[in-house]
Amino acid sequence: MPSPLDQIRTFTALGNRILANEGVLDAFGHVSMRHPTNPTRYFLSRSRAPELVEPADILEYDLDSNPVKKTDQRLYAERVIHGEIYKARPDVMAVVHHHAPAVMPFCISGVELQPVMHLGAVIGPKVPMWDQYDDFGDTNLLLVKPEEGASLARSLGDAPLVLMKGHGATVVGSSIQELVFRAIYSCRNAEYQFMAKVLGNVSPLRPGEVEKSSQINAMPTANFRTWEYWSVRLDKAGGGLPRAGKKRVGTSAKRASVAPTKSRKAKGRAR
Image (cartoon, rainbow, N blue to C red; front, side, top):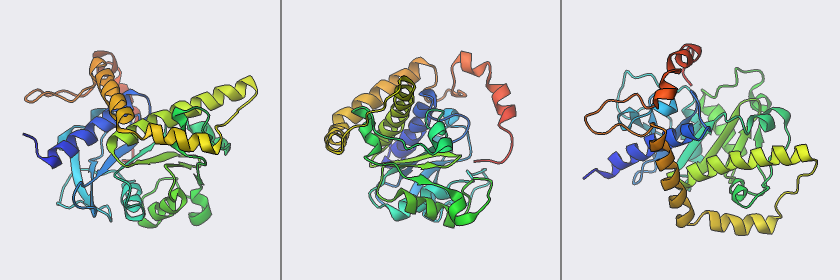
């Protein structure tokens, strides 16, 4: 019988893989979960592409984003995103940072991301935009200092997600299932808003519609139904977690055929 912490490591690995399979994460980005009984700890993978993350990769950190146990593993440079949000938001139990193509046009243009469909209500009535330049001037856009993570957390406020100018998005949830639901449907919402604008008119949801839709979307039936669905899609794609005693490098044969090229392009500073 797996222990609660073993389950956390499994769920964290699955969250990474599901979001990679659904096109939210690529070689970069990362998913974390807060410790279920110790709110001053969280779990995050060593520096590895999300599609390849396994439970054994998941390390435990304090809220200053230092590993609880000494390790020689390479770590994500931007782990302060997670630690500082957990400090600022006691209600948050899971975090993902991503650079999904669906949201990048909004991060680049500054056009407001708005809820335009009932499932898109997961983004809330207004999505904040964080510009690193405002507090830190010219940077390489990575968040590697605690003060940078804290600035992002302040911009997030009590919202479900925050866009990051020229960089991507950070999404939070009260569970890993809610986080994955919100991350995926916020991207779908961005796609539909973009397409509606091409047609000439964007009609966002009314505040009351956002509130009522959000209540439905937060129900366990919605979160667990979609988690099961995306888990099956992951398995069908060949990207599920390796079975006990069987080593697998996390991708389908089709994806594995191009993995070496991707890894060469991804060389550089761990994120």
